[in-house]
Image 1 (spheres, one colour):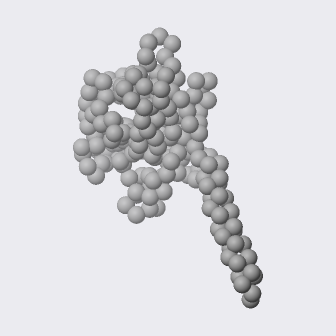
Image 2 (tube, one colour; image 1 turned 135 degrees about the vertical axis):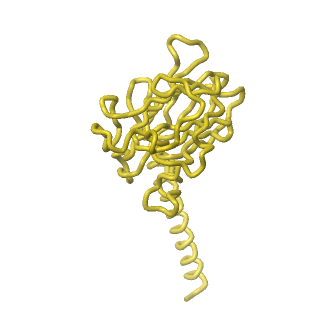
Length: 229
């Protein structure tokens, strides 16, 4: 093979490699979850509402059987995502509808509430600092909503495994068995992107339950981006 042919072959291989990289990047961008903005409060200044639900199976996308989140936008439309934005210097009122069954915790500290205003969450209308993690005396903890950068830890109480009106796939609706957890946190005085995740291993079929949805955006981990007003 001549020198020119060798150079040409190298350039073709290089171009093919770049094309594969770009294909992967654009494929990721096409499949990246939607970003949903928290809803401005109509009655409280400097406040927004963030409404989410956790489903045992999201019901859509490349992994419809994976556990994951849906987030509601200002028009009431549910999006299967874990990417949200909230304004800086704002109280964020969070409501989580939890449709998944609960179980025992590997670490009981995950049953404690931290980093939210008042130090409590409201679970089904009752204020609590510690959510019962024992599935023999209650429903157990299904998941946790944890934002390490903001010091937030919220256990999400599960529904009973024998619930008669159990939601099979998302987005679920309030006529199906669920629990409701409400809490408020302050977004802080600087713009930043905070990672949040669940610490209850729920990736069935993966080593120690920590693969699959546990490590994937749009399922059990995501980002809260604090943006300028």
